[in-house]
Every structure is written in C-alpha cells, then in structure tokens.
Image (tube, rainbow, N blue to C red):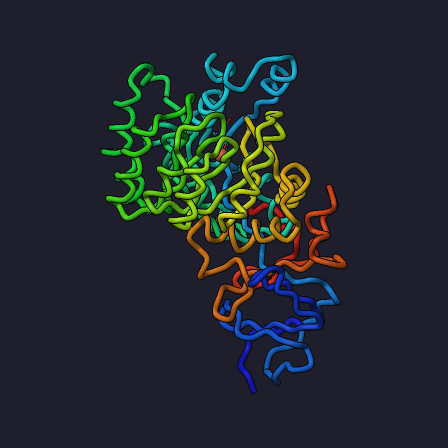
Length: 408
Ligand code: NIG
Ligand code: FE
C-alpha cells in the first residue's frame, strides 16, 4: 500500500521526455509535492490517496514561460501607433521613448502599484497552465528601482501558485543620468548594483541587452564576469536586431540561454551547441515589430541546440500574455513542429532557467507541476489560436483551478 498524497487517473500523459513521451490511459501519483509514480492506469498500485478522475484529459508538465518582462508600469500603445505610421523601434528608442518610457513609469510606481499593474498579466499566463515564470528587472536602472522590480517579482511567487525565477537585467538600457557614460554605468552595475541585489537574495540569474541600442560585447562581458564572481548564471538578449556575437559570448560563459537570435551566425550556433546554451525563441517580438529576418531554426535543430519558446511579455516589443499563442507563432512563422513548440514551453524552457532537474517534464522525483488539457492530441496546444483548453493545474503537488483570482 503506497502512502501517496494524490493520484490522478484516467489521463493521457505527455511526459516530454523523448519527444512527446505519450502514455495513453495512464495515472500519475504525487508524494510531498513530487512525482512519485506514473504508468498505465491498469498497473496503478493500491494507495491511501483518493483517486482523482482526470476525465480523459491530456496531462503535460506545467508550462514554463522562461523570458518575461512582465513586471512593469504603464503601456506603450502610443509607440505601437507611431510604428504603424512608419517610425522604427530603434528611432523611438533613440528619441528617448522605448525602454526609457517604461523606465519613467516604473520608477514612479510604488511596490504595490507595480504589483497591481502586473498581476492581470500574470493571471493570464496562469490561466493557460503556466507553473513556472521567469521575471526580469531592467525598467528601474538604478539600485532602488531595480530592487523594487525584483521584490515585486518575488511577491508574485509568494502570493500566487507559480514558481518565479528572477533575472537581473540592469544592463537593459542606459539610464538618462548616465547619458554618454555607458562604461561608468556598467562599472556601477558590477561594483554596486548587482552585489547588493544579489546579497538581498533578489537575483537568480543575470541578463543583458547586447545590441547597438543596448550594450557592447565588451560591456556585456564585464557584467558576466561580475555575475560569475557571485556564482550567478548568465543569459543574454543576443542577435535580435544585429549580429554582435552575443550568443557565442554568453555560451563561452556557460550561459543558460541566448534569447531572440534572429541574426544568429553559424559561429554562434556552434558555440551554443558546444556549451549546452538554450536558444530562447521569441516570436511575439518578431511579430509585433514586423521583423522579417527569422532565427536559424533549421541550423539550430541540426546542431542539436535545445529551443525554448517564450512570450517575452513586455510593453514595447511583445505585449503578449499567451504562451500557447507564442507556441503557435513559433510553428506558423518559423516552422517549429508542435512537438518542438511544446518542448519549448516545458523541458527546454526549464533548461533555459537551470531548472531541468526540478520541473519541465514528467519524471519521478521532479516537482509535481502539471497542466490538464481538454484536447484530442498534444499538437492541439500549438494549433488553436485564442482557445484556452486548460482544465486544471497542479503546482508543487497542489491543485489549483485554471483561473486564479487576485490575491487580497
Ligand atoms: O526582449 N530587447 C530588449 N528588451 C525587450 C524589449 C523591451 C522594451 O522595448 O521595453 C525585448 O524585446
Ligand atoms: Fe526580452
């Protein structure tokens, strides 16, 4: 007699180990928040747990959104209109809008106000079966404002049934008080901002925006060195608008991921393959900026680089709060297979956060993070546009309804 806490039977599993890892007419058991057993339903051992009926749903690992800027204040629909009238993202950025516009709004907001504005976006993701969420800073650009963003990210993980990983993105843009002094800002970031935020326990990983309108590879490397000195893993916004060799740079630091990658080179791919760096694909930003240069999906696949898919939820380039839609876009725009898209939002997204031993696939011992879906086959998740088939979610072995309400 097993002393399990929960057993869900009458489900079809997609374990996301070795492709979909389909197991029809299955059951899965949980003990102490972890997966204790799964297998064919007719081989389910006797246990003390009450059997829960999965009603023929598909059960996948809980979804993981591994690249978001979901904590921010204000919005930039005015820039959306300006871009539709011919302005480019870079024009707007150089004119003091873009990221800087969100920096002004985010600096002005209190912790509570920032949380209040961010929660509806988080709830939209949770309603679609997201159980792990990465949240970046990068709209504060001074120590106190970056700390505020990261505190709010931590509160989201404490108040809602979702695991949050925080990423310090102080090198997102040059704050106006450092105009013309980018090196001095990077020095401050490395010597003061990052060490302080890390010692406050607010930082799980470090990111930068390596781009003509962001920071140079040399400046990015200083940020990575500072992160390494604090034993923090790194990732990078790389090759989004041009090829500065950022992917190879982050790979050489054993980086968790290189993200965007529309302008990724052969050398970048080889370096990522060599170091096991995940390619995080962000079709929302490509779509919303009406870009035409596609990331080299065929070459990434051929090189065996794991591809994750994420929303990049942010107010400027991807105001998107649907990971299922990002999966559809990755398939439709860039020809990922639906299986690759689901792997991109589960096991490979876990790897992009360094959580591949904790979540992202159904393996005995991993955290019991599940999403249940009213679908006929796993490919339906990437196929439908705007339908949310999520029927239930388990996070850390605890059931939650797909729709979560705002905390008090
Ligand atoms: O991932 N590329 C830089 N960072 C964000 C955009 C941020 C913004 O425009 O507010 C991105 O696309
Ligand atoms: Fe981003």
